[in-house]
Length: 312
Image 1 (cartoon, rainbow, N blue to C red):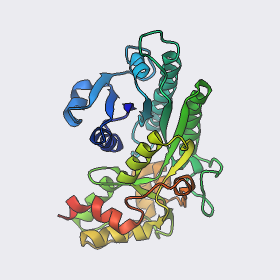
Image 2 (cartoon, one colour):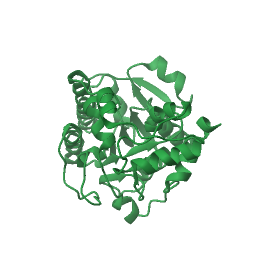
Image 3 (cartoon, rainbow, N blue to C red):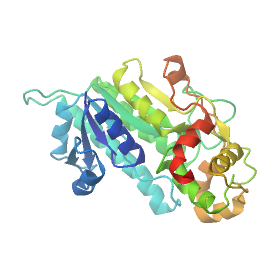
């Protein structure tokens, strides 16, 4: 398969590129910094320059691929200020809207061999459901309230516009990503590696997580299986709690874990702390019903793999 990937230089993106290349796909990564991207990506991967929000030569890239994966967007794991919130939102909407415009243009091209890609796999997040859900929620759950829920709703709406072009659209509602060298663990392992870290507050909140290998697995599965469309919760079937997550991490690393006062974390992280102390029990009904086979459905094996470098 020929795959075009936006956001291919981030934590999830680099794992996905390696997986696609390993299975024999032809991969083109869109990036603002071509030189830097080439240093961190497999040499089999093609790199092309793009500027989200502007038309350019990168539009032509979409005319000669079978699928588009969009993971582009400013990091959410940062202190939320007016400026950072604007960047988080605008970067996602700008990238997605530009890709849909390029998809439309691909269908109008008369170049030899040009065609419109059949599928768009677009990132979103379980933040769609809000920071505090009631009970177990699957893909049929309603949109929640708050900044991240609003961002996800508009983000997904931008992607769904591609359906009017006859493109199969998959919206990945991604949970807390665990994996070596990045994701949520990168920020959590620092304190644990020293001597102390733990849940924020009492740790009773429900945390819906996914190992990066399963997130990548769900993307490649969605690329191949036409049954996968619409919203797709990218989480383990077995949610955990903040306390269980922290204690399990500490156990794997052989370190103690002590609770961090919520008031302290709020002073450090601001409004963003809501996605950490909030409670989300998100069930991946579509993945389970359609038979996706998990690599790491259980928390401890997922952490053992994800934390192996930190432990050693």
